[in-house]
Length: 343
Image 1: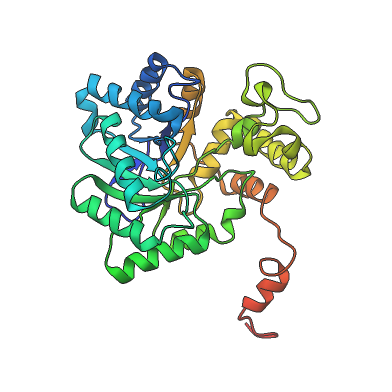
Image 2: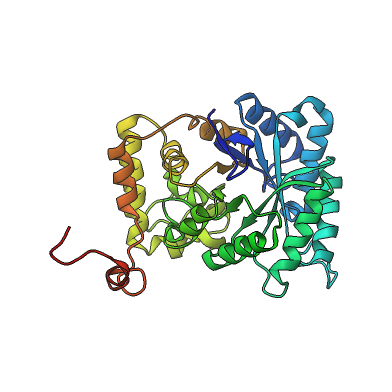
């Protein structure tokens, strides 16, 4: 396992993170304990959850695991999130001081810890002034309830506003961003990644395998069946089969991943994870695994690095290609400082 600093903080974390969204649902508690043990034995340290994962049961399982293995708390970095509702209360949603105070205390109880290492705002809240959120976070850090604070699913301007307001007021600034990022989802390279780099946020990408698409399990024009996520529900979420199957770029990327995997003798999942780990600003990649077998296969990507030629092949297959203003050729021409006929 390799390690990297958590964004602009001084805390080192493993380059692979264990995502626990399936704990308590697709992954029962006993299997979750086994996954946590396996991850730590492989050198993994960063464990990511959220208060809304399986209605809080994911956090509770991690808390019971920590209680059963008291020596592990000093070895792992616990990350969770707050923002979305966990009950029917009209005040129980958003990034207000009121809601986050309740949500943070509930997460601390479920996780059975005194301090959460990385507390992340699960999404932007259009109704709460960001200064209110930042002052809550700063107070929580001073109270010892949080070590670091991060963002999740924020856009470029939201990252900039949060970081600038924190800087101006002398408040605790975010150190990480958790976005969806993989070989099939790369539009964040246009503004979100540059904003993250500008403000020192390390990326913690979720869905690194594109909901299973990058493992090669799905076929062109053959609707999935069986015990896979899309086999059980082909219209599931962002990775819905019909939407991605209809885009030629999807299959160009999958073919490129397959080519590199076959040349190297690695799995397609390992190649897709290795590409993501080596992208600029990426601190750690969040692996979600329903089964122990999937986890072990993904952990085999630890320490795998692709050649420049392999990285270029994969990057070129799915590179964002806007063709108009402001990101395509017209926009680039406006921003360029090249002097015609000069150097």
